[in-house]
Amino acid sequence: VDAFDDEDSANEAYSEFIQTAADMVNDRELEQDNTIDLKSLQLVGKELTIAKKMANREDYEVPVYIDGNLTAVNLHIVHSEGESRVDIRMETERLGTVSASFSLREGNAQGTLISDNSATSEIWKKEEAEISDRFKNLGINLTNLNIVTESAIKKSPTLSVDEMDKEKDSVKSESSDLYKMAKSFIAVIRKL
Image 1 (cartoon, rainbow, N blue to C red):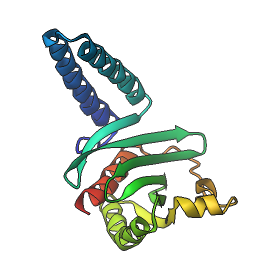
Image 2 (cartoon, rainbow, N blue to C red):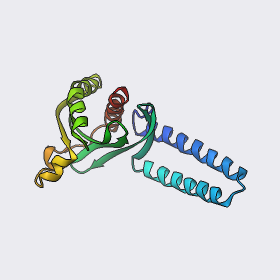
Image 3 (cartoon, rainbow, N blue to C red):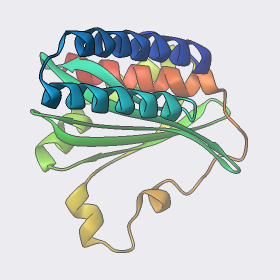
C-alpha cells in the first residue's frame, strides 16, 4: 500500500508482488513430492493470475499488517460516467468487517464508512478528524463523512450508500488522489 500513489505506481508494486509470489509458488512446486500440495500450489498460481487481471481493472487485494496480523485489503478504484471513487474493504479481528467508500469532486471528498458493529462505528467517529486531517494534507477537503453500521442499513430499506452520497462526481477525478485517499485511510486503520 505504501507504493500506491497513483495507478502506475500501484500497478508496478502489485505486479512485483504477484511476480514474487508466483516465483515462490513455482520454486515450491519443483520441491514437492506430494500431489495434494502440488495441486494446492497450482491453485495459488491460478489465483495470482486472476489477481493480476483484477489489477488491470484497478481492483487490488493487498496484504497489509493491521494489529500485527496480515490482513487482505480490497481496494477498488472506480471511474465511470458521473462517478469517481475509491472503495476499500477489509476484515480485521478487532474492527470486524470494514467498508469505506470515498468519492472526489474538485478537491472535495465525501465518504461513507460501514462497519458490522457499533463499537467500530464509535471508533470511526473518534477518528473522523484524523481522516479529515490526512485528506487535508493531500489538498483534499473532506466535506461529509457518513458513519453507519450494516444493521442500520438493513433496518432502513430506504437508506443506501448511494443515497447517503447523493452528489455523484460529474468529472473524472485525478486517479492519484483516489489512491492517496485510500493510502491515508489505511494508515489511520494501521495506527488504531
